[in-house]
Structures are given as C-alpha cells and as structure tokens.
Length: 581
Image (cartoon, rainbow, N blue to C red; front, side):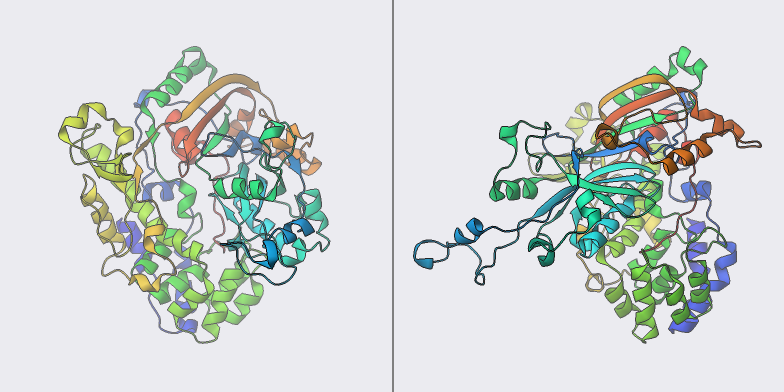
C-alpha cells in the first residue's frame, strides 16, 4: 500500500493542460512494468488454499496456442454458446410485417409505437462473436466498426482479457443501422463473417437461436418468426462461462505419484481463492487503480494526466511518440501521433484539454462510461483482493458469525447467524465491493477494506453527480471469496507443437492460417539460452481441463490454485500492454 501511495504522489498536480502533461514526464523514467511487482501490489503474491506440498509444474501457453484457453458463454439454462456458421445478413423488413402493424380500419394496435408510413420498427439483431489471438477483448470494437455503430451500442457479456479464444453473444437491441436494414450492400467482411485485422482473428456468425435446422437444436426449437427471434434475443443472458484449458509441461513424476489427480480433486472439494485476475488492473506502467484513485477522490487534473501518459515504456508501446509529446506538454502533436484505431478516447480527451475545457468536463465528454467504471472498479477490486488475503490469514479459515452470505429467498446479502455455521463453507462467504461515496457494509472484512481504501483514496470521495453512471451499477454488491468450479472433467495427453483441443472454427473445417502456424512453430521451437527450458515445455505430458464458472470469475484463479503458483509463474508471455481506449 505504501508503494501505491508513493506512485500516486510521484507526480504533482498542475492546473493547466500544458503544465499538466509536462509534469507527468518527470516520473516516467522510474516506472516500469513488472508482473511480479503488480501481483504483490494487487494481493496476488502467494495466497492459496492448497498446502505448499501441492505445487505442480505446468505452463499456460495460450499466447502461442490460442486453443489452449477457450471460453464459451453459458446461458441461464446451461446451454453453451457455439459458432455454427459464418457470415451475417441484414434484417430487411417485409410487407407482411408492415401490414400487420395496424388493426382493422387502420387503427394502431394497443401498446404499439406510432410510426411513419412504411416504417417497420427494427428487430433486435444478434450474432455470435468469435475471437482468437493475444487480445480477444478487441473483437467487440472490430465488429462495431464493421457495423458502423459505436462500440457502446453493442450489448455483450464481459470480454476475455487474456490470450486465447472467446465465443460470446452480441446484440444490437435497436437493430442494425437503417442503411443495413433497408438492404444497402453489406460489406464483404460481414457477409463472409471474417473481419479484417491481424490480431485478434475475429469472426462473426449465427447462434443456435438463429440457425434453422443447423443441428444445434431440434428444428422445432428454432425460431421461425420475428417475434420468436425477438424473444430469444431479449431473454439471452450470459450467466457464466465454460472453459477448456490446456496446461503443458507437466512433470511425469508428479503424474505418476498421483499429484495431478489429487490437486484436481482438492480443487473440486475446496475451490479456489476468487481473486480478480491480474489483467483487470492494467499492464501498463501506470496502473488502472492509480487512475481510478484520482477519479474516486475528484482529482480530475491528475486523472486526465495519468490517462494520457499511462504508457510510459521506452519500447513496445504503439504510441511512444504520442506519449512523449503528452509528457512534454505538446498535446496537439500527441493527438496526431496516436494510432488511428483503438485510441479515439485518448485523442478526444487531449482535444478537450487543448480547447481549454476544465479537466472534469473533458473527462465527462471524452471518456466513455465503461472506461470510468473500469478505472473506478479497479480500486474496489484492489481493496477486495487485499481484504480476502487478510480474511484468510488473520481469521479462521471457516465461516464465522457476522460473515456475509447470499439469501436466496430475499435475493440479497445478509449476515450469517451463529446457528448456521455448521451448514456453511468458505464458498458461501461474501465480501462487499466498496463504491465511491458509500460506506462499507458491516461484515468481518470491513476493517480490512476500509484500511486499504484509506491508504489508496484518502480524503473525501468525489460527489456521485460527477460520475457518468450510478455507482451502484459499477460492480456487484458482493463477491464470494472462494469459487467452486462446476462440471469438471480432465484427461492427460501427450502434447506436440500444435493445438490439443478443437475449437469452433475447426468444427467448421477452418484451420489456422499459414501465418498463425508459422508463428506457433517459431514460438514453440527451443531456443538457446535461459528460456530454452520453458520453450521445450510445449511437448510432453499435458493436462486438458474443462470446467464452468459463474459470470465474473476467471480461469486464472482456477489454474493458480491448481498449480499453486502465481500467474507470472505459469502464464506464458505475461508482459506489458498498452492502456488505450
């Protein structure tokens, strides 16, 4: 926590935009991304449920073999979402729909919206989005550009923030743009289902709820009318995720001794510490919770400055020139040097400051609500992670009276009673997620949460009216401290330099491109020097593990508990990433 405060106070506050950006450059030389340092700062520095003797050898290589980590959305009824076909078509209204919108005598039906002559209210548009590569979280932005809509117009569940493959449901509740609805020629990329761009590979197609007679569900279960399609699209909700994970480089001696089987059985019985994953805190030189702390306490000048200069690496950043210009106060020059794609928010923020708008107004105008929530939420997640560590190290590893639990009857959290202790386990215990301007609820971890918040966000919180959303919607009210994976299955196989689990594209008969194959072969081939040992771990025994988790919980926590290792010890290629929006 002292390190966090030192980092936050290392840059002085300036009232003007030019001096504001110039001051940020003074501390740039001392900030470097280090995965292990970040793990310690955010509470992932070595807390586990398993004993020290349970440590396993293993490596997640999804940065080289994306199919080693696959995540599919799961609906409320337990159905797993899959990509059934490629390509999307515009929704073109027909005459029958138009004529049915009015009753006898031209009277409008009760409850229907007034419309101009010939206008048909748009149907919700839905599709399945497939992303494969190092940055699958960029897929939604790529699809929005192809559909010519703002990224915020697309509705979807949380994105996968680590290298791998993600399959998720996306929708436009208000339908496609009018040009597409009326039959304007759709771009070849959308018709083929393959969106342009190198990484990630992004494809879009139909879901089981749109595929007629495609085999995913009986033909009778497929929607055949617009009203049925609308019903299915409106009722779909991402309730969780189904994961398929490959852990390479297992130690044959641990397999023979039965340690892998023991660890998986322990994972099923005891669960895993449900920490927020490392990527949620940002992997640039300025952490997301540092920006979030400035927003939390109303330090708008500092928040704007940190956003513009978050990527302070001397190499590896795609916007080196822009950040250097921002640090020296050349905001207009920095705007010109930002990448064309992916940095629209930063460019808009710099423009607002150049025009002389106050920092708060610039932030409110240029920064999307989702980005505000990302930064503010990282403060809550940081405090929550540290409170979990304190709860398990300073109190008994069992429920105690006063802990928070979920009450299924009332649909709310409540305190655990003394006579309920024997019927509850750690997986039933919740810790609240703090929010700006709200007191931390009374519970066994309240003092730990408040202690972290006092060090990270001292002073008064900013007024809620300054935030572009209700803080109550920023994060769930509480989160369970121990997660339990469901529907667990596994097997051990012999790995080679290639995928070990088929993905949806493979089922469609589409194989990785030659470029992807060459990249995987080059990344997996042994090299001389200190890294040759880890490079050889793509071959040999490998674990194929499948499990389900509720929405918001990550495979990183499961693997961390299974291997009894921190992410920096088992995730291949865990390095810095540009912080852009």
